[in-house]
Amino acid sequence: MKSLHLGCWAYVGLVLLTSAWVRADIFIPAVTRASTGLSQGDKDTIAAFLKEQLAAIQAGADGGMGTTRDRLVEASKALGDPCSPVYLDEYSGELNAALMPLLRGRTLPVRVRLNLAIAMYKIADNAQNGRLAPAAVELLKDQRDDVCLWGMKVAEKVIVSDVQTNGVNSSVLRAILPAAQAHSLNGSIVKEAYTALTPPNQNDPGFLGMVTNAIPELLKLFKLRVDMYDTALPDEPEAEKQASYALTTKAVWGALVQPDKERVMQFETTLLMRCLQYFSDPKLPKESRAAALAVIENCGETVEAVGFAAGIQPLVDNPGALVMLLRSDASKESTPTDVQPLIAPILPAIKAAFPNVKVPDMAQPTPATATDPPATQSDGQ
Picture 1 (cartoon, rainbow, N blue to C red):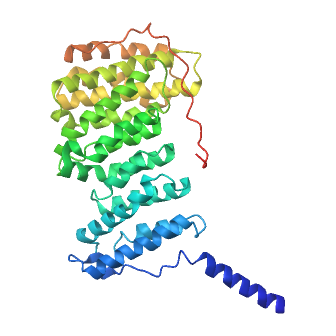
Picture 2: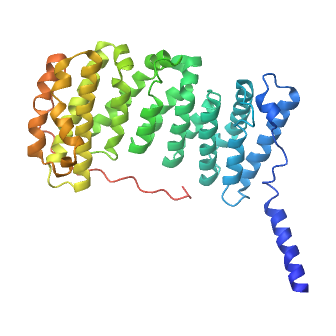
């Protein structure tokens, strides 16, 4: 009985020790979250709550940090009445200020940086403002692929507001392309970058600002990735689907100037021909040839979309057979002999509508082996 009694007290001591950082002693009440006029006391409560939670997540005392991360996110959600924009602005702004010195030094363990990035993504999604933009830029500067990837996700949530406020000088907008390049145009990161640079719905107040300021960055990034296809099939070629979609919605296409429309069609033509090369190369692994075929399908769909958006009927009609085949179950058994004749009529239709587009020579360059995916980084990096 004595040993059981001592064991119970030892367990209680262990619980008290490990819970020192994770007790929710400070709580942001519903009335504060719904307030449209925060008092100094409300602001002090927010600051104290964030100080406590950030200390806990750095200490890692809650066995995986998920509990503390979730508390940070939960405080950006409503308790009854909706959170007011005033509260969300204060909460995300105070969080950003607290995070900046932590992220700038890049000395936090990877696990902590990732948990903070995930929390930031969810908070930015709830807040729908740009207050976390500076902290997002610090994530984009991280050398770790996985941290930068989550930085791109955060960027997607804050960029529209940041561009509305700062236009072409938006810090997040300026950080996206260098971040993608610093990570060797990693397919997963590029896909998130494309998504971040995609304008919102045309009825969104931020639409025009994104078309004016973000589309030029998206075109630069798209070109860098398309150029990679000249020598090898890059990792995650399906990423290009997001860029194609972003540039060819009816609203965005209508807002593009003619030279940019021709650039888009040049990219699609290059992808179409290069991926036909890779699909036709028997030396490539089956998975790589299937990925190339998926890009071909996307190019056909994109040309169709441009045809609809621009009212150019040959661009609607000519990709039809290709798209129909590749959307069907029969696509799994498709061969270059099936696909190449269906691509042939698309090319003159593109040239007729966009005379400056050049069709790449099928003979050059020689298709290379698909690039290997980037090595997984260890937590020590």
